[in-house]
Length: 159
Image (cartoon, rainbow, N blue to C red; front, side):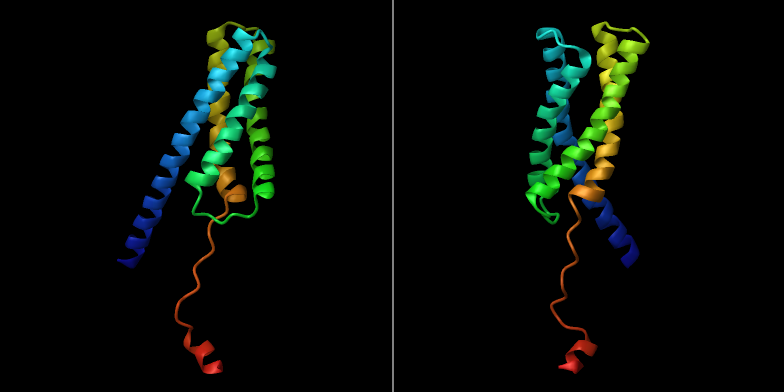
C-alpha cells in the first residue's frame, strides 16, 4: 500500500506542476503568438525577426512565472545560472520554431497569415515539449530530500 500512496502523491505533485506550467505557458503562448503577428503584420518585419522578438518577450515572462510560481518549491541554484540555462534551452526551442517557420515560408513558399500561424503553432508545440522536459532536468532542480529529524541508530551510537 505504501507504494501506491507514494505513486499517488508523485502523480498529484506532477499534475499540479503541469497545471502551473500550462498556465504560465498559456500566457506566454498568447504573448508569443500575439507578438509574432504584431511584429510581422503590424510592423512589417520578416517571419524570423518577428519570431525572435516575440519569443524573447514571452521567454522573459515565462522564466519569472515558472521560477516564482511553477517551480518555487524547487531549489534555487542562483538567478544567473538558472536564467542563463533557461534562455539557452529556450534558444533551442526557438530554433525549432524558426525551422518550422523558415521551412513554411522559404521552402514551401506559403507566406499567408494562416500558413505562417500554423507553422508557428507547430513550432511552439514542439518547443513546449522540449522545454518542459529540459526545465525540470537542468534549470529548476528538484529540492533535495529533507534531513530526518532523528538520527539513525548507527550515527547516534557513534556519539
